[in-house]
Length: 312
Image (cartoon, rainbow, N blue to C red; front, top):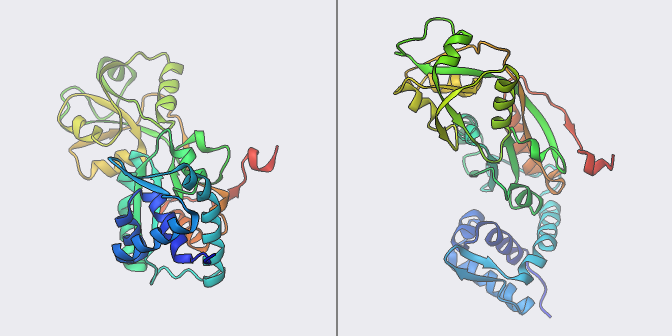
């Protein structure tokens, strides 16, 4: 029987992540032909097609699903022996990292991260995906390196690091006809609002609980599934929106809006980064986490195991 080759395993791992031989080849710095050859040799080794072409890309077979965690561990162990514990060099690496984040992370973290990488790690690529119902599974299976944002559903089962505490502000159009320098309870209740119903984050619950606790009944004129277009909509209408403070300040530089303190105590939440134990000691992922942490103000540099991992 032929011996397993590290390149075959790496190609398998990247195809499993990306559902694409082409993307796997790009991430590994191989030609598509070389990646296809490696995958075919692994297919012959196991006597299984491993992946089949579908309209959604290369779909893993049951045998591939069974092999994935084993081959991922083998790849990490072998690459670790080749590079050493301190062998990751961001200045020369061509590694692709997949980060799961909220829509707020896309607007605030991604630009700063990409600007940092341009100078310190020009060959490193970031593949971003939106937090959703499959995010927990994808983190557990090693398909995602890191999750960043306010994601209380990930507090159990993963390593986590608190990055920064945030609160909320109210935004309105700079030319709003009725608002003055200070936002009062009466003004807030009298105006129409945008309500953001996010999936995969805890922002919706935090906002709704705070408003309910104050006994305020908002006049919701628009519901949207994310924060991405909220500032633009606010700038072109007379609607108000309660948004995280960092988002308000970032979008104020791009949109014609004013930022107001809420007329009631603002709820607070903590932005964290989460990762699976399989990546905890990986030099490349340690570097990625440190890079993300440095981009966040008032970083709390404390890592903790969750209840499930400690068995408490």
